[in-house]
Image (tube, rainbow, N blue to C red; front, top):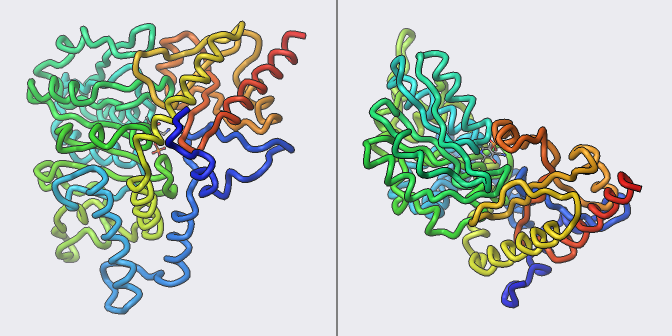
Length: 412
Ligand code: PMP
């Protein structure tokens, strides 16, 4: 456990964590699904609705100006968080899923011909598969994937053969939500770029768990990067698509409506520049402001110490589970963050997850929107505990107690 890091003090900033569930202190270990929100984020959203609520960009009145400044200020915060060259490379979306659909529809589809290929990996979330499937169905392009090794890391030896002259995009996750594997993002980008292939990075699981330099879009040189606010202590309903300016400027709008236009006639319209071009209609204003507050809060943390604490919890829980009979850990790659996926040979994940709740332990049980990963490891579902810096040793102990209870119930 890191001596420099005070997890209890951090935890005290999250009101939701100070409760009991079924008479037990809440051990919230479902951070991979969504993170809890610190008081500063709750306050930012409340403050907006209590003092500044108005629609943005169009208003000439004071509240409209404040709301616009808050929304555009959040964009600048995201730019700083990702070290993008310009805030104009930051498009607000509803989340990772919408960002990927935007790239699939606006960037990729116009470029696809029958026989073209989209390369993904065997560990993608459905959000980084289904939009490409739809694009393939509409154009005759095909999916290829980088296979997984038995430990849940990418089989990188296959990559040179998969990046071909037909590959139009390489879309991969930085961190697997089902396995916890951390992929070598910069190396993958460089390999794709060496063949002139653009890259999309799904950073949904990475944003809250990797150090800043591994999310620096200029250093990574990725073409697109997407994430969701709710996975990094911000609100739901808001996410980010980072795109290189040269790409965004060349991409047609995907959705039409107010605020994304330059001029509209009855029979045609011209469009605003990026990012407005991709933000049709009234956006999630309070949510964007909440995301700005979340990123500001996160950047002010001692991130190295916070992530070291989280890594120590993952290591401790992993070691403890390894010592238990009838437990199989799914995903044992050399570099992992946050995620501990496992199956019990004496209980179905859904049954076990329900029993965990009796101990106040919140984990996920299911396929984690990664059915190809489940198929690869020959399991229908897993239990998944996912750690954040506000978790403590007590949460790990609660998890171990919950497993012991399931073991007793199902084997006695
Ligand atoms: N990609 C990964 C790796 C994820 O973990 C998730 C969320 N579980 C998504 C994409 C989709 O994110 P959202 O549902 O917030 O759009």
